[in-house]
Image (cartoon, rainbow, N blue to C red):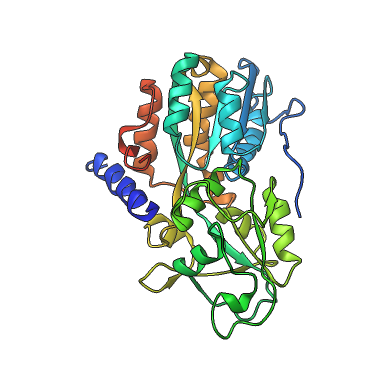
Length: 333
């Protein structure tokens, strides 16, 4: 289960520090050169990023600020999903892949076959959030077992009354990320306990904003999305606490950071090609993302790491060590 895996990663990483209705596909950022008071014309080049729609708000916001400081650099950011982004990354189309789950063994093998060396860069925490419409007055929490029965392949849950006695005899309308998204993969492993397996009769949303819109406009809707998308739309959504056996817990900065929002707390990543990191504009952007620009993480609704962990990540990036970060091996599996 991901709760045990995630907590193992957190403990391992901190110990290692010692005393220290949907459619659409892609959006882009960085259409034109941006000027700024701190512009640095000496840095130039281009960076291509694609992948997780969950991580997109972080890298998109970082891109805008970075290009304001470095107008000679052009960055494009797509949000096709972790799985789709990994395919582009491994086919040579992009320099960086945003990912809402760790790189998989098959993808590591594909990278080796393609001669691609990658560096894994953890950047923030997220709490995958269960959301309903604010007009839903009957749900005050859901257990992980109830979520599993709702979303598992072959589920017989068609009405809210099928979930729990006392719930109304109303249809349940399910909204979820498309199967290209790492959030879909993470949820199916953590809740359904069958990775990449889920009932097929749900509204697949390639864009998270469309998922939010679907739940916000349907009284009978239920969905799941990254914490930042709830934070940005909290006036239009109702957050559902999750009970994994120790009582209901809602995602928050505190419960996500300490892992008590279980099993739906998770780290987020960017993956960078080692060959790309050798370019000054790429190295400067990654340094900014985990350094001076990391205040963006909280602004976009996600949960930053402790400063000491960013120091460790920076050391890892500077060393150019390829493959999975040693502290993250448990998370991968």
